[in-house]
Amino acid sequence: MGRVMAEDAFEAVVGAHHAEIRRYLLRITARGSDADDLSQETFLRAFRAYRALPPGSNVRAWLFTIATNLGRNHFRAQGRRRRAYAAAALEMRPDAPDRADGQVLAGETRERLERVITGLPAKQRLAFIMRKMHELEYSEIGASLSCSEESARAHVFQALRKVRRGLDGHLPIGMESRS
Amino acid sequence: MSPQYPVCRAIEPDLLSVAAGEAGAAAVGRVESHVAICGACREELGHYRALEGMMGTLRRAPLPDDDATLARAQLASRLADLRSRMVGFGIFPSPLGRILIGRSEQGVALVQYLPAGGSLPAHVQRLLGEDAVEDRAATEGLRAELVEYLEGRRARLDWPLDLRRMRSDFQRRVLEATAALPYGAVTSYAGIAARIGAPSAVRPVAQALRWNPLPIVIPCHRVIGTSGALTGYAGRRVELKQRLLAVEGVKTVAAARHDFKVDRDAMYTMVTGDREYCVPTCGSLPSQSMSTLTLFGTREGAEAAGFAPCTSCRPDLHPLPA
Image (cartoon, rainbow over all chains, first blue to last red; front, side, top):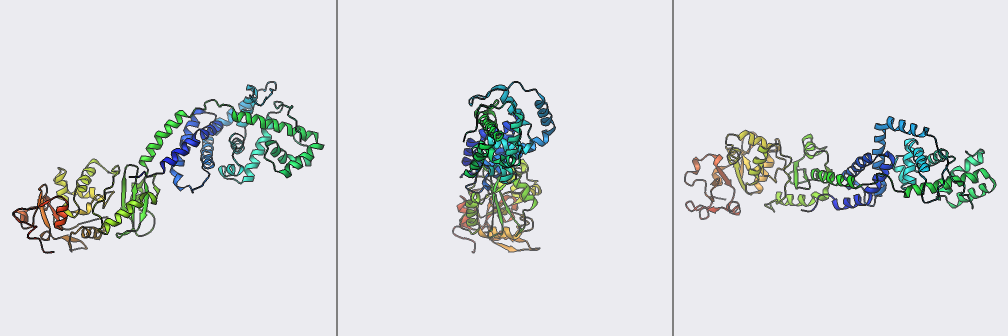
């Protein structure tokens, strides 16, 4: 008897995207165990719905949408703890500015950058990570956050402004704009 | 240090786009002409470009805890478990009305008669479980074979079965004994009870068959009352049982209260466990209880099931009137 489900196709989906989806969830939850759980849940949900997905769909963006929804539910459950952590992190005193040399971010700057990102409001943070860390299109980010492409772009820009302010004094000034 | 002038605030989105390398030519032009005259924004653009550079470095940098091996292995095992439970089903018209066929990875898990329209009855939803998905393609081959069967063009449904929806070990034994009944044969509830070594459990046998998740495939329509009455099928739809038996060559006559009856005197008869079939008047057969007998509507049915004509009554030479 032939196989019931489109299993091999789904195996390929897992193979192609699981590591990245887990990395995304790791970035948004900052905990390996949460990323493990939520990445599994993402693919179990995806498997249930996979056959209903129209042919030619953007599977990667669809997986980001599922992962984003699970991540947001997770934040709602953990909200208080995360906000407390973020607030405490932001109160830490910054040290002297570091130079980013394009290859390696000095530990302090990286920590500060990650702390600022962690402190962003949820939608801005998710949009920012999807755009800057995973290079999703604004339309894909909009689909993940159930908002328009323009709102997705606005979330990313708002986040950028806040990150830029949060890093004031830590940004190298040597990179002039020359047109 | 946010831009102080309205013109600077207005240019800011373009400035961010240019820094990110995602701006169109028009935005690039606007930013170029603005920063040529605005030092603050020129500096700001530099900061945003630096920030984009940092983001790129961060994107490429290894993450702590970035080991998906464990999650991947757990996922594989959970997916395997989900797959084995998952039922893909199709709903089809058939000569016996709307029918649902569901199959899991292990085999055919469900065949259910459905009412003419509307949503799935609660007991069918329960049988399907939470992880059922409509999948006509996966059940289309089964549908085609079932229709052939119902039209009398096929005598066997050699389907692998998923029997995990059995309510009890007892039900499993009843259905296994029922599945062994050959095409074109009938026996009684008492006969099934005797076969599974529980001769007094006639009513429990009837109950077990009532909740058969795989009617037609597990031929509970071949099990009738000791009086020869068909007694019941698919709720109150005993006419379906009559039609299924007619397809297999088992003749019935109308009986009281919308029921039908198998006429024992018009059936080839054998004592369950024997290898030979007889005319119903052979030897002591007329006085035997229905619980010990298996009946066939046709000689062809009995012989296709591997039985030989009795050497005393010679049903091959003296067949029953057609």
